[in-house]
Amino acid sequence: MPKLVDHDLRREEVAEAAWRVIGRDGIEGATLREIAREAGFTTGVIQHYFRDRDELLAFAARLISQQGSARLAEAIADHPAGRERLRALLGVLVPSSLRAARVAVLLGFWARAATDPRHNAIYLKQYARLRAVFREQVVLAAAVGAVAPGSDVDDVTDRLIAFGDGLCMRAGLDPERYPEPRRRQLIDSLLAAL
Amino acid sequence: MPKLVDHDLRREEVAEAAWRVIGRDGIEGATLREIAREAGFTTGVIQHYFRDRDELLAFAARLISQQGSARLAEAIADHPAGRERLRALLGVLVPSSLRAARVAVLLGFWARAATDPRHNAIYLKQYARLRAVFREQVVLAAAVGAVAPGSDVDDVTDRLIAFGDGLCMRAGLDPERYPEPRRRQLIDSLLAAL
DNA sequence: CTTTTTATATTACGTGTGCAATGTTAAAAA
DNA sequence: TTTTTAACATTGCACACGTAATATAAAAAG
Image (cartoon, rainbow over all chains, first blue to last red; front, side, top):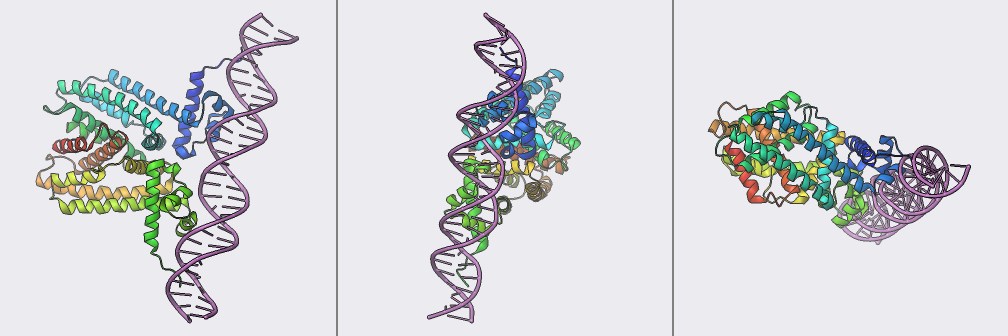
Protein backbone atom coordinates (compact mmCIF):
# COMPACT_ATOMS: atom_id res chain seq x y z
CA MET A 1 0.00 0.00 0.00
CA PRO A 2 1.18 3.50 -0.78
CA LYS A 3 1.28 6.74 1.12
CA LEU A 4 -1.58 6.97 3.57
CA VAL A 5 -3.76 10.08 3.56
CA ASP A 6 -6.83 10.96 5.60
CA HIS A 7 -9.41 11.43 2.90
CA ASP A 8 -11.84 13.48 4.94
CA LEU A 9 -9.06 15.76 6.07
CA ARG A 10 -7.88 16.36 2.52
CA ARG A 11 -11.40 17.10 1.42
CA GLU A 12 -11.78 19.63 4.19
CA GLU A 13 -8.46 21.17 3.29
CA VAL A 14 -9.61 21.63 -0.29
CA ALA A 15 -13.00 22.92 0.82
CA GLU A 16 -11.42 25.54 3.02
CA ALA A 17 -9.28 26.69 0.15
CA ALA A 18 -12.45 26.95 -1.87
CA TRP A 19 -13.98 29.20 0.78
CA ARG A 20 -11.03 31.51 0.69
CA VAL A 21 -11.27 31.78 -3.08
CA ILE A 22 -15.02 32.34 -3.00
CA GLY A 23 -14.57 34.97 -0.34
CA ARG A 24 -12.08 36.74 -2.56
CA ASP A 25 -13.43 36.26 -6.06
CA GLY A 26 -16.97 34.99 -5.67
CA ILE A 27 -18.25 31.59 -6.70
CA GLU A 28 -17.62 32.23 -10.37
CA GLY A 29 -14.01 32.88 -9.54
CA ALA A 30 -13.74 29.58 -7.71
CA THR A 31 -12.31 27.56 -10.57
CA LEU A 32 -10.57 24.27 -10.01
CA ARG A 33 -7.27 25.76 -10.99
CA GLU A 34 -7.63 28.67 -8.59
CA ILE A 35 -8.78 26.49 -5.71
CA ALA A 36 -5.88 24.15 -6.32
CA ARG A 37 -3.43 27.05 -6.37
CA GLU A 38 -4.91 28.40 -3.14
CA ALA A 39 -4.65 25.00 -1.47
CA GLY A 40 -1.14 24.47 -2.71
CA PHE A 41 -2.12 21.41 -4.71
CA THR A 42 -2.53 20.67 -8.36
CA THR A 43 -5.86 20.20 -10.01
CA GLY A 44 -5.06 16.52 -10.21
CA VAL A 45 -5.36 16.26 -6.44
CA ILE A 46 -8.78 17.85 -6.45
CA GLN A 47 -9.87 15.46 -9.13
CA HIS A 48 -8.70 12.62 -6.98
CA TYR A 49 -10.84 13.61 -4.02
CA PHE A 50 -13.89 15.02 -5.75
CA ARG A 51 -15.78 13.68 -8.70
CA ASP A 52 -16.23 17.14 -10.17
CA ARG A 53 -16.46 20.81 -9.32
CA ASP A 54 -20.09 20.59 -8.28
CA GLU A 55 -19.40 17.87 -5.74
CA LEU A 56 -16.63 19.96 -4.27
CA LEU A 57 -18.89 22.98 -3.90
CA ALA A 58 -21.63 20.84 -2.39
CA PHE A 59 -19.17 19.38 0.08
CA ALA A 60 -17.97 22.84 1.01
CA ALA A 61 -21.54 23.99 1.56
CA ARG A 62 -22.29 21.03 3.79
CA LEU A 63 -19.11 21.50 5.75
CA ILE A 64 -19.75 25.16 6.46
CA SER A 65 -23.15 24.21 7.81
CA GLN A 66 -21.73 21.46 10.03
CA GLN A 67 -19.31 23.91 11.53
CA GLY A 68 -22.20 26.27 12.15
CA SER A 69 -24.03 23.50 13.98
CA ALA A 70 -21.01 22.93 16.16
CA ARG A 71 -20.88 26.60 17.03
CA LEU A 72 -24.58 26.56 17.87
CA ALA A 73 -23.98 23.68 20.27
CA GLU A 74 -21.14 25.60 21.86
CA ALA A 75 -23.32 28.66 22.27
CA ILE A 76 -25.96 26.57 23.98
CA ALA A 77 -23.47 24.91 26.28
CA ASP A 78 -21.83 28.18 27.25
CA HIS A 79 -24.90 30.25 28.04
CA PRO A 80 -27.88 29.77 30.34
CA ALA A 81 -31.28 29.33 28.75
CA GLY A 82 -33.15 32.52 28.14
CA ARG A 83 -32.16 35.82 26.63
CA GLU A 84 -28.45 35.23 27.04
CA ARG A 85 -28.60 32.00 25.11
CA LEU A 86 -30.69 33.56 22.34
CA ARG A 87 -28.12 36.31 22.10
CA ALA A 88 -25.38 33.72 21.74
CA LEU A 89 -27.31 31.92 19.02
CA LEU A 90 -27.76 35.14 17.07
CA GLY A 91 -24.07 35.66 17.54
CA VAL A 92 -23.52 32.50 15.53
CA LEU A 93 -25.60 33.81 12.63
CA VAL A 94 -23.91 37.21 12.90
CA PRO A 95 -20.48 36.36 14.26
CA SER A 96 -18.55 39.08 16.02
CA SER A 97 -15.62 38.62 13.66
CA LEU A 98 -17.69 39.16 10.56
CA ARG A 99 -15.51 39.27 7.49
CA ALA A 100 -16.77 40.29 4.09
CA ALA A 101 -15.28 37.09 2.74
CA ARG A 102 -17.47 35.02 5.01
CA VAL A 103 -20.59 36.77 3.80
CA ALA A 104 -19.45 36.36 0.24
CA VAL A 105 -19.30 32.61 0.78
CA LEU A 106 -22.75 32.50 2.37
CA LEU A 107 -24.28 34.70 -0.29
CA GLY A 108 -22.60 32.67 -2.98
CA PHE A 109 -24.08 29.44 -1.71
CA TRP A 110 -27.49 31.00 -1.15
CA ALA A 111 -27.48 32.45 -4.63
CA ARG A 112 -26.57 29.06 -6.00
CA ALA A 113 -29.31 27.41 -3.93
CA ALA A 114 -31.78 29.75 -5.60
CA THR A 115 -31.18 28.29 -9.04
CA ASP A 116 -29.53 24.90 -8.53
CA PRO A 117 -31.90 22.21 -7.19
CA ARG A 118 -29.10 20.14 -5.73
CA HIS A 119 -27.77 23.00 -3.67
CA ASN A 120 -31.29 23.99 -2.72
CA ALA A 121 -31.82 20.56 -1.22
CA ILE A 122 -28.65 20.94 0.80
CA TYR A 123 -29.82 24.33 1.94
CA LEU A 124 -33.22 23.05 3.03
CA LYS A 125 -31.65 20.39 5.22
CA GLN A 126 -29.29 22.89 6.78
CA TYR A 127 -32.08 25.31 7.44
CA ALA A 128 -34.37 22.73 8.99
CA ARG A 129 -31.63 21.85 11.47
CA LEU A 130 -30.90 25.47 12.25
CA ARG A 131 -34.54 26.28 12.76
CA ALA A 132 -35.12 23.31 15.04
CA VAL A 133 -32.29 24.43 17.29
CA PHE A 134 -33.55 27.98 17.43
CA ARG A 135 -37.12 26.91 18.07
CA GLU A 136 -36.13 24.72 20.98
CA GLN A 137 -34.29 27.57 22.59
CA VAL A 138 -37.15 29.97 22.03
CA VAL A 139 -39.40 27.55 23.90
CA LEU A 140 -36.96 27.47 26.78
CA ALA A 141 -36.60 31.23 26.72
CA ALA A 142 -40.35 31.65 26.88
CA ALA A 143 -40.50 29.37 29.90
CA VAL A 144 -38.01 31.65 31.62
CA GLY A 145 -39.94 34.75 30.71
CA ALA A 146 -37.47 36.08 28.15
CA VAL A 147 -40.20 36.21 25.54
CA ALA A 148 -43.38 38.21 25.86
CA PRO A 149 -46.19 35.94 27.05
CA GLY A 150 -48.68 35.04 24.37
CA SER A 151 -46.10 35.15 21.59
CA ASP A 152 -46.24 32.37 19.06
CA VAL A 153 -43.10 30.27 19.26
CA ASP A 154 -42.83 29.73 15.52
CA ASP A 155 -43.31 33.41 14.81
CA VAL A 156 -40.59 34.39 17.24
CA THR A 157 -38.26 31.75 15.84
CA ASP A 158 -38.70 32.87 12.28
CA ARG A 159 -38.36 36.51 13.23
CA LEU A 160 -35.12 35.82 15.02
CA ILE A 161 -33.61 33.91 12.15
CA ALA A 162 -34.75 36.35 9.49
CA PHE A 163 -33.31 39.22 11.48
CA GLY A 164 -30.02 37.41 11.98
CA ASP A 165 -29.64 36.53 8.33
CA GLY A 166 -30.56 40.00 7.18
CA LEU A 167 -28.18 41.66 9.58
CA CYS A 168 -25.38 39.29 8.63
CA MET A 169 -25.85 40.15 4.99
CA ARG A 170 -26.17 43.90 5.40
CA ALA A 171 -23.23 44.02 7.78
CA GLY A 172 -21.06 41.97 5.46
CA LEU A 173 -21.79 44.25 2.52
CA ASP A 174 -21.56 47.47 4.52
CA PRO A 175 -19.14 46.88 7.38
CA GLU A 176 -18.61 50.59 7.95
CA ARG A 177 -22.21 51.15 8.88
CA TYR A 178 -22.38 47.99 10.95
CA PRO A 179 -19.24 47.59 13.02
CA GLU A 180 -19.26 44.97 15.73
CA PRO A 181 -20.60 47.15 18.57
CA ARG A 182 -23.45 48.32 16.39
CA ARG A 183 -24.35 44.74 15.53
CA ARG A 184 -24.36 43.76 19.18
CA GLN A 185 -26.52 46.75 19.99
CA LEU A 186 -29.03 45.76 17.33
CA ILE A 187 -29.17 42.21 18.60
CA ASP A 188 -29.81 43.44 22.13
CA SER A 189 -32.42 45.84 20.88
CA LEU A 190 -34.16 43.01 19.09
CA LEU A 191 -34.05 40.74 22.12
CA ALA A 192 -35.44 43.47 24.33
CA ALA A 193 -38.42 43.76 22.02
CA LEU A 194 -39.27 40.08 22.29
CA MET B 1 -30.07 59.83 -39.89
CA PRO B 2 -31.11 56.22 -39.65
CA LYS B 3 -33.66 54.31 -37.69
CA LEU B 4 -34.37 55.97 -34.38
CA VAL B 5 -34.33 53.88 -31.23
CA ASP B 6 -34.87 54.89 -27.61
CA HIS B 7 -31.58 53.95 -26.07
CA ASP B 8 -32.78 53.84 -22.49
CA LEU B 9 -35.68 51.65 -23.46
CA ARG B 10 -33.45 49.20 -25.27
CA ARG B 11 -31.12 49.05 -22.34
CA GLU B 12 -34.00 48.29 -20.02
CA GLU B 13 -35.22 45.64 -22.40
CA VAL B 14 -31.85 43.95 -22.31
CA ALA B 15 -31.57 44.33 -18.55
CA GLU B 16 -34.93 42.67 -18.03
CA ALA B 17 -33.85 39.77 -20.18
CA ALA B 18 -30.74 39.56 -18.01
CA TRP B 19 -32.93 39.30 -14.91
CA ARG B 20 -34.88 36.44 -16.38
CA VAL B 21 -31.70 34.58 -17.22
CA ILE B 22 -30.19 35.23 -13.79
CA GLY B 23 -33.41 34.07 -12.16
CA ARG B 24 -33.19 30.88 -14.15
CA ASP B 25 -29.48 30.09 -14.30
CA GLY B 26 -27.82 32.38 -11.79
CA ILE B 27 -25.38 35.16 -12.57
CA GLU B 28 -22.76 32.78 -13.91
CA GLY B 29 -25.33 31.56 -16.42
CA ALA B 30 -26.00 35.09 -17.56
CA THR B 31 -23.68 35.09 -20.55
CA LEU B 32 -23.97 37.62 -23.31
CA ARG B 33 -25.13 34.96 -25.71
CA GLU B 34 -27.82 33.69 -23.36
CA ILE B 35 -29.07 37.15 -22.48
CA ALA B 36 -29.23 38.01 -26.15
CA ARG B 37 -31.18 34.84 -26.91
CA GLU B 38 -33.57 35.58 -24.06
CA ALA B 39 -34.12 39.12 -25.30
CA GLY B 40 -34.56 37.99 -28.87
CA PHE B 41 -31.55 39.96 -30.03
CA THR B 42 -28.09 39.06 -31.17
CA THR B 43 -25.02 39.68 -29.11
CA GLY B 44 -24.20 42.48 -31.50
CA VAL B 45 -27.12 44.48 -30.15
CA ILE B 46 -25.95 44.11 -26.61
CA GLN B 47 -22.49 45.21 -27.61
CA HIS B 48 -24.02 48.24 -29.23
CA TYR B 49 -25.79 49.38 -26.06
CA PHE B 50 -23.33 48.30 -23.39
CA ARG B 51 -19.60 48.65 -23.27
CA ASP B 52 -19.17 45.21 -21.80
CA ARG B 53 -20.84 42.54 -19.69
CA ASP B 54 -20.02 44.23 -16.44
CA GLU B 55 -21.66 47.48 -17.46
CA LEU B 56 -24.77 45.57 -18.41
CA LEU B 57 -24.92 43.84 -15.03
CA ALA B 58 -24.31 47.12 -13.23
CA PHE B 59 -27.09 48.76 -15.21
CA ALA B 60 -29.44 45.92 -14.38
CA ALA B 61 -28.58 46.22 -10.69
CA ARG B 62 -29.25 49.94 -10.72
CA LEU B 63 -32.50 49.51 -12.58
CA ILE B 64 -33.87 46.94 -10.17
CA SER B 65 -33.17 49.33 -7.32
CA GLN B 66 -34.87 52.22 -9.08
CA GLN B 67 -37.96 50.14 -9.54
CA GLY B 68 -37.83 49.27 -5.87
CA SER B 69 -37.72 52.96 -5.02
CA ALA B 70 -40.78 53.54 -7.13
CA ARG B 71 -42.64 50.81 -5.30
CA LEU B 72 -41.62 52.29 -1.97
CA ALA B 73 -43.07 55.63 -3.04
CA GLU B 74 -46.28 53.89 -4.05
CA ALA B 75 -46.50 52.13 -0.73
CA ILE B 76 -46.12 55.44 1.07
CA ALA B 77 -48.72 57.15 -1.07
CA ASP B 78 -51.25 54.36 -0.65
CA HIS B 79 -51.08 53.85 3.10
CA PRO B 80 -51.50 56.17 6.08
CA ALA B 81 -48.45 56.79 8.24
CA GLY B 82 -47.99 54.36 11.07
CA ARG B 83 -48.14 50.62 11.26
CA GLU B 84 -50.04 50.24 8.00
CA ARG B 85 -47.40 52.12 6.09
CA LEU B 86 -44.58 50.17 7.69
CA ARG B 87 -46.34 46.99 6.69
CA ALA B 88 -46.58 48.23 3.14
CA LEU B 89 -42.88 49.09 3.11
CA LEU B 90 -41.97 45.62 4.34
CA GLY B 91 -44.23 44.33 1.62
CA VAL B 92 -41.88 45.93 -0.88
CA LEU B 93 -38.87 44.12 0.55
CA VAL B 94 -40.85 40.89 0.75
CA PRO B 95 -43.32 41.22 -2.10
CA SER B 96 -46.47 39.16 -1.96
CA SER B 97 -45.72 37.65 -5.34
CA LEU B 98 -42.31 36.39 -4.31
CA ARG B 99 -40.79 34.31 -7.05
CA ALA B 100 -37.66 32.27 -6.56
CA ALA B 101 -36.28 33.92 -9.67
CA ARG B 102 -36.57 37.32 -8.07
CA VAL B 103 -34.64 36.19 -5.03
CA ALA B 104 -32.04 34.60 -7.27
CA VAL B 105 -31.48 37.97 -8.90
CA LEU B 106 -31.18 39.78 -5.59
CA LEU B 107 -28.89 37.16 -4.11
CA GLY B 108 -26.82 37.17 -7.25
CA PHE B 109 -26.27 40.90 -7.07
CA TRP B 110 -25.64 40.82 -3.34
CA ALA B 111 -23.12 38.05 -3.76
CA ARG B 112 -21.41 40.03 -6.46
CA ALA B 113 -21.41 43.14 -4.28
CA ALA B 114 -19.55 41.13 -1.65
CA THR B 115 -16.53 40.64 -3.88
CA ASP B 116 -16.72 43.25 -6.63
CA PRO B 117 -15.97 46.81 -5.45
CA ARG B 118 -17.90 48.39 -8.29
CA HIS B 119 -21.07 46.52 -7.49
CA ASN B 120 -20.53 47.13 -3.80
CA ALA B 121 -20.54 50.85 -4.45
CA ILE B 122 -23.80 50.53 -6.34
CA TYR B 123 -25.22 48.51 -3.47
CA LEU B 124 -24.18 51.08 -0.87
CA LYS B 125 -25.97 53.85 -2.73
CA GLN B 126 -29.10 51.76 -3.08
CA TYR B 127 -29.06 50.83 0.56
CA ALA B 128 -28.55 54.37 1.79
CA ARG B 129 -31.64 55.44 -0.15
CA LEU B 130 -33.68 52.52 1.13
CA ARG B 131 -32.64 53.11 4.70
CA ALA B 132 -33.45 56.81 4.54
CA VAL B 133 -36.97 56.08 3.37
CA PHE B 134 -37.52 53.50 6.07
CA ARG B 135 -36.11 55.72 8.77
CA GLU B 136 -38.37 58.60 7.84
CA GLN B 137 -41.40 56.39 8.09
CA VAL B 138 -40.28 54.94 11.40
CA VAL B 139 -40.13 58.46 12.77
CA LEU B 140 -43.65 59.12 11.56
CA ALA B 141 -44.85 55.81 12.95
CA ALA B 142 -43.35 56.61 16.32
CA ALA B 143 -45.17 59.90 16.33
CA VAL B 144 -48.43 58.05 15.82
CA GLY B 145 -47.66 55.58 18.56
CA ALA B 146 -47.04 52.58 16.29
CA VAL B 147 -43.63 52.10 17.85
CA ALA B 148 -42.98 51.47 21.51
CA PRO B 149 -42.04 54.74 23.23
CA GLY B 150 -38.39 55.02 24.06
CA SER B 151 -37.29 52.92 21.10
CA ASP B 152 -34.30 54.20 19.20
CA VAL B 153 -35.31 55.16 15.68
CA ASP B 154 -32.15 53.84 14.06
CA ASP B 155 -32.39 50.56 15.91
CA VAL B 156 -35.96 50.03 14.81
CA THR B 157 -35.12 50.97 11.23
CA ASP B 158 -32.25 48.54 11.01
CA ARG B 159 -34.23 45.79 12.67
CA LEU B 160 -37.05 46.25 10.19
CA ILE B 161 -34.79 46.12 7.18
CA ALA B 162 -32.73 43.20 8.42
CA PHE B 163 -35.90 41.26 9.11
CA GLY B 164 -37.31 42.07 5.71
CA ASP B 165 -34.19 41.06 3.86
CA GLY B 166 -33.79 37.87 5.84
CA LEU B 167 -37.38 36.86 5.32
CA CYS B 168 -37.20 37.63 1.62
CA MET B 169 -34.17 35.40 1.29
CA ARG B 170 -35.46 32.51 3.36
CA ALA B 171 -38.84 32.63 1.68
CA GLY B 172 -37.31 32.68 -1.76
CA LEU B 173 -35.17 29.66 -1.02
CA ASP B 174 -37.88 27.77 0.85
CA PRO B 175 -41.23 28.85 -0.57
CA GLU B 176 -43.03 25.82 0.83
CA ARG B 177 -42.32 26.80 4.39
CA TYR B 178 -43.04 30.45 3.73
CA PRO B 179 -46.12 30.83 1.55
CA GLU B 180 -47.60 34.26 1.21
CA PRO B 181 -50.00 34.09 4.19
CA ARG B 182 -47.19 32.95 6.46
CA ARG B 183 -45.03 35.82 5.33
CA ARG B 184 -47.80 38.31 6.03
CA GLN B 185 -48.34 36.77 9.42
CA LEU B 186 -44.67 37.12 10.25
CA ILE B 187 -44.65 40.73 9.17
CA ASP B 188 -47.66 41.47 11.34
CA SER B 189 -46.11 39.64 14.23
CA LEU B 190 -42.97 41.73 13.87
CA LEU B 191 -44.91 44.97 13.67
CA ALA B 192 -46.91 44.05 16.75
CA ALA B 193 -43.69 43.63 18.69
CA LEU B 194 -42.46 47.11 17.81
C1' DC C 1 13.78 -6.46 -4.78
C1' DT C 2 9.49 -6.68 -7.02
C1' DT C 3 4.79 -5.89 -7.11
C1' DT C 4 0.77 -3.41 -6.10
C1' DT C 5 -1.88 0.41 -5.01
C1' DT C 6 -2.67 5.04 -3.86
C1' DA C 7 -1.30 10.00 -4.13
C1' DT C 8 0.08 13.50 -6.92
C1' DA C 9 1.48 15.76 -11.32
C1' DT C 10 1.17 16.77 -16.15
C1' DT C 11 -0.74 17.28 -20.50
C1' DA C 12 -4.21 17.57 -23.96
C1' DC C 13 -8.83 18.28 -25.68
C1' DG C 14 -13.26 20.07 -26.58
C1' DT C 15 -16.33 23.71 -25.30
C1' DG C 16 -17.92 28.17 -24.29
C1' DT C 17 -16.73 32.64 -23.08
C1' DG C 18 -16.14 38.00 -23.71
C1' DC C 19 -14.97 40.89 -27.03
C1' DA C 20 -13.21 43.02 -31.34
C1' DA C 21 -13.61 43.56 -36.09
C1' DT C 22 -16.25 43.68 -39.91
C1' DG C 23 -20.28 43.26 -42.74
C1' DT C 24 -25.25 44.19 -43.77
C1' DT C 25 -29.59 46.67 -43.55
C1' DA C 26 -32.58 50.38 -43.53
C1' DA C 27 -34.25 54.80 -42.50
C1' DA C 28 -33.62 59.69 -42.23
C1' DA C 29 -31.39 63.73 -44.15
C1' DA C 30 -29.65 66.21 -48.16
C1' DT D 1 -32.10 59.85 -55.31
C1' DT D 2 -28.16 59.71 -53.22
C1' DT D 3 -25.66 59.81 -49.05
C1' DT D 4 -25.01 59.11 -44.42
C1' DT D 5 -25.24 56.89 -40.18
C1' DA D 6 -27.27 54.36 -36.52
C1' DA D 7 -29.02 49.65 -35.75
C1' DC D 8 -28.21 45.13 -36.07
C1' DA D 9 -25.81 40.69 -37.58
C1' DT D 10 -21.90 37.67 -38.24
C1' DT D 11 -17.56 35.80 -37.71
C1' DG D 12 -13.26 34.91 -35.65
C1' DC D 13 -9.93 34.87 -32.00
C1' DA D 14 -7.54 34.35 -27.77
C1' DC D 15 -8.33 32.53 -23.50
C1' DA D 16 -9.92 29.95 -19.54
C1' DC D 17 -12.66 26.48 -18.19
C1' DG D 18 -13.86 21.37 -16.58
C1' DT D 19 -12.45 17.08 -17.33
C1' DA D 20 -10.26 12.86 -19.21
C1' DA D 21 -6.14 10.45 -19.93
C1' DT D 22 -1.82 9.46 -18.66
C1' DA D 23 2.57 9.61 -16.24
C1' DT D 24 5.39 9.66 -12.05
C1' DA D 25 6.37 8.99 -7.10
C1' DA D 26 6.07 6.60 -3.01
C1' DA D 27 5.09 3.37 0.37
C1' DA D 28 3.35 -0.95 2.09
C1' DA D 29 3.23 -6.10 1.10
C1' DG D 30 5.18 -10.36 -0.49
